[in-house]
Length: 463
Ligand code: PMP
Image (cartoon, rainbow, N blue to C red; front, top):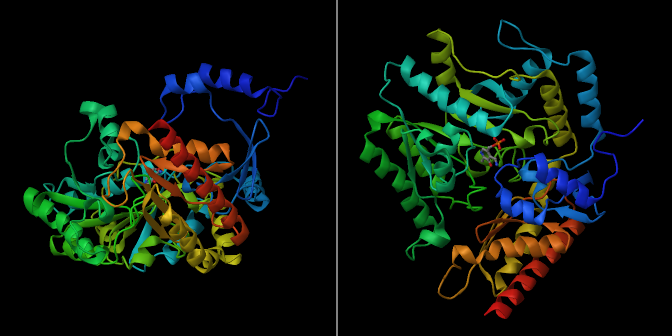
């Protein structure tokens, strides 16, 4: 019988032709991809991925910041197979539930701050954030304050790419893609991006200034109109921005002062990235109402996400009654929930989060050591998360023009050397699987430096 699955042998060029013919990739310039062809990945183990040419690549991105436990964990595959045999699906709409979803809800509540008491399941980070938006909106309706409608988020934030969450995200190209479909009731403030936005203040003073922008915005639109403020504890896809310590206490104070719900997007930062279960633990964010999680919850062995709500919200939602008109076929999917439970068990049993905390100083040393590079203006690190800012002139803090695509050049140079390194504009981001070892970190950072050297050389030649 002819092989028809993805294992059937075709050359890389044949895979690329078929890919171009039929597959619309997310966030992709299709014409450019057609000219170049996709890199087709075939298998993966630990922190390494192999493509169809047999090249081994260190996945410095953990997929998309999601493969926490690394690739090829048979325990997760076995749990998925077992649950598929036992209860392959269960709808949760019509007074029906399943054991895995109930246990996962309990587990998430036990891992997060005490006041988070309820969990709504979905499949993607976008859906989790959109659920948070709808929970916030419903809350104010039930409280008799339907005029609290505006959501505030930050420039370059990434909260998803649906119409609602794409609008909530602070990325103009995403807004342009949705055009007039983008929701009107959205406002954005600048991110706490000290390197780019500070006026000579030290980082901590700048943190307070940046939080003050939220207060200014709330006052500008009127607190009585603001439903919630959404933010990632660490801004991931929007530039690897790690806020000063002074930022989050101020944000919490301001949200409370004006009765604005605080929604924390832990889609990337949750489940160990910072060396704590959640980045909100790391930054001391305890006074919030909603939390979106996804990605690392299953190490991406199954698409699963969740929105967690505080008792303050849940009490109103439940006590006031009335149907919450929201949900997805796959909400509380038993297989996804079983995989998540096993993933969380492994993270705990193998002390993976402690491992991140223990190696975080080594990771930070590696990142800091890149600061002497001619192309590097700023370096930022937190747990196993790093941003390396490329600049034209370090002394003057002069950035490259966007069209020079210097970051893109650097990520290509890294890939040629066997490292997947993300460029966010001219910020290079690293967020490897959490199980990466000290020698593997050495290897990853040696390749990062080699990519920077190659980029600097190419720029010199071009000048
Ligand atoms: N929030 C954050 C912080 C993210 O990084 C992402 C995805 N990168 C999302 C939300 C959206 O998640 P998804 O792509 O699963 O919809």
